[in-house]
Image (cartoon, rainbow, N blue to C red):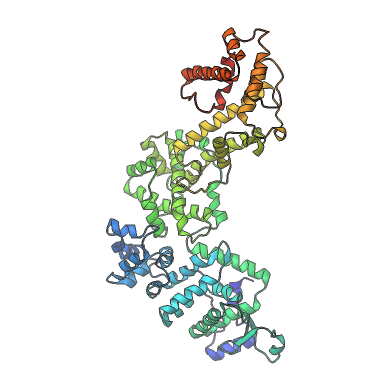
Length: 592
């Protein structure tokens, strides 16, 4: 039996039913219908009226800037209160926007805002602050009540009335235990607890006297009984019935229901966006017009996605260039559909990755991640042609395009994993130059990789994707160059400070001399001595032999001359810089 079912049957037993019927007479009133799901939103079924009410908030660029992340909360509140009908405008805000605005303006000014709020908005204040993953943090519930009480008793009563029964039950459960009052109840009460009766006398409530949130919990109980006796008794009986195993299920079910009411999927469902889709097979299908079968079947209708800060952030986000140009080519209806779909996609990506759903600070990050990933798919499908990209946008859902774009990144990640395995794992990666090792580790991180900076993973643009592909090709070429040398490096036995450069250079030198490769990388003097053994056999050109005979410094000059030759042929090398791994083989062979 779920928590909701238990609350609904709170008066099924004879004693409680009798008491309830006395308190609220009338046949058929023994059954309590619990408050489940989203509370009342006056604009829920009228998106046009909502948009009309919000229009004054977006009448110019300065007004629109107020609603971006990091805007001035006090200025936002002033803008709202200056409206001719501030209650209508405030209640038109989406539940998300309202909850974030309360956070932005701070507790000192928030009571003025809560006094104008709809039940749905008061509910959202708790939804966004109290849920941490799938656990309920009770402190924000009582902190929200304190802010509401600062606005007056009527606002506090509306605040409690707006919360879902299950949320209140779970919040109280951490601070109170309910025991039905009966003649033998004194024998069940602990000696060291604070015990008080419920306002109707039906329950003894047991609490820890040292609990700092106990006064707030008692205040919730008082407000519940002042609002609705049946509801108050049902919630207290939920405390009496609760068992630990049931509690875990109740929390999970309540959390999932609250997130769904806010428009968010569960993280597990949202992560289905990242399921691999073969971008090359998809592109082949585009060439044969297979895409026409997908026209208009998976996008949300205009107005379905909640209009709020998600919409504002997506609308104001810097669109990747190809995506922006392609949207500009669309008819108004298609462009509007894409805008709503981008908003829905931002919801899903945020739900899949955000530390906590209510952390609006993460919203720009995941919005950009969503748009950039769609851009990768557009580039892949259109080869940069804006007209073709517009056709793709018209015929495919953004969720599909996100999966294709992510698939392009996954292909490079799988290449990196194969390369890491060929290098012998992390020990082999550590032999790479620092920049290459960091690059490989980043690419092997959880996707999408979150970092401190403007880029949220190694691949964000088509240029990034091309660069990653080139770097992996270079590293793969380097790794494969070791194989023909016959070298079998045991990474655990390498001396400290060894790098893949020294390994490859040593292997190629041994190969040039026709000798079995050595396990140990050679320093410059060892290379000189080794090459010197070939003089008598005449395997080196006379001018090189004379240079090598003069010592290590001329050897460096010989290598530099070899690099000059490589640079003249291939370009792009700095002879004074670090020797790039992929050219070491050429340098050794040119020096022969």
